[in-house]
Amino acid sequence: MSIIPGYTPPDFTAPHLVAAPVVTLEKAPADGVVPRNFHGTSNHPEYLHIGDGRWLLAPESRMDAVMVLKGDTLDVVEARRVRKGDQVVVGRTENGEEGIYVHIEGFEPPKETAVDKFSFRTRGTRETPFSRCYDDLYQVLRHDRDHGHIVWVLGPAVAFDKDSRDAMQGLIENGYCHGLLAGNALATHDLEAAMYRTGLGQDIYSQTLQPLGHYNHLDIINEVRRRGSIKQTIAELELKDGIIYACEKQGVPYVLAGSIRDDGPLPEVISDVYRAQDAMRGHARQATTVVALATQLHSIAFGNMVPSYRAMADGSVRPVFFYIVDMTEFSADKLANRGSAQAVAILTNAQDFTVNLWNNLKK
Image (cartoon, rainbow, N blue to C red; front, side):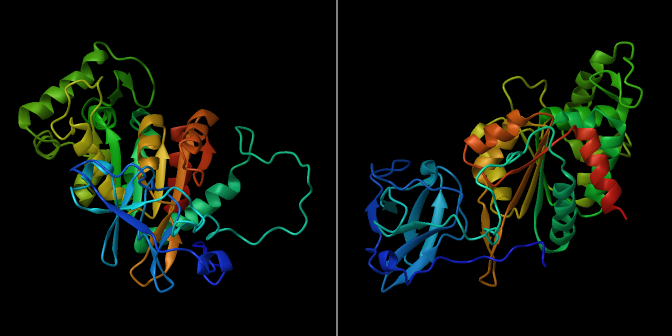
């Protein structure tokens, strides 16, 4: 059986959908302003009844956006992008009552036949074994390396350890990353490790603190800013390893979103939050698999941008896999509470996860 599950579309012959009215549209009253009864999107497949029994699937979606219909073309956009006069979908029901149908069961596996009403261990926690999750992820990544768009969302912890940093470099260099999203810290400490073999002044292998090591990340930021770009710095300082080095070497695009607490920052960091959001959204529109590792805020932010499905060029619909990897349930729960219920949590540390993944995928 394929690791990519099939999709079952809604039954549009069901009486309540046959009787559904055509969706209602209202013009946006001004740029960045939508009608008061606008339909706010989810990350599930959503269909609009556009007349004569025709239901139009949004080709991709995201949470908390709006739908703009232009003929038979349906765009899901952030409200700030709406222009005066755009035809915005209105209505806040989801079962066809206003010509809008939100489909949440398209990828559900067949129901198990023998499930007790009461049972233990129905929810993933830190004591859950994740062997099956890893096995599924290996298969998904092997498939999407050649047939999808794999996006990694990384926190700086990945660069603090030699083994996890080496493993992530190997994954990138072997095609398991088509886009990387992070903040100033990940790139800074990865470049620090390439230059000084430290992360925040601590040796990335022995974990011993180095004399004046707390200057190292500031020094590498200064070196990059002196040269004007990460690419130029890698060349001039002859840096030979790391996550950012691998992205530059392989031509993998990365988005570094700024934070209020950034040092520097590096020249490539996007300090305008909405420009950073737009750059991340570009990857959300392409993603087929997302691995968010050791970064709570970036994981939740990107989770809010990513649909749970992707309408493919051949007319098929496939799921977008989202894995969140962290030491505790908190990040996974927070992401689920923000609407990304499809996210699969693997509770472990960054080093164990990346090394495990690379050891299995490099075979």
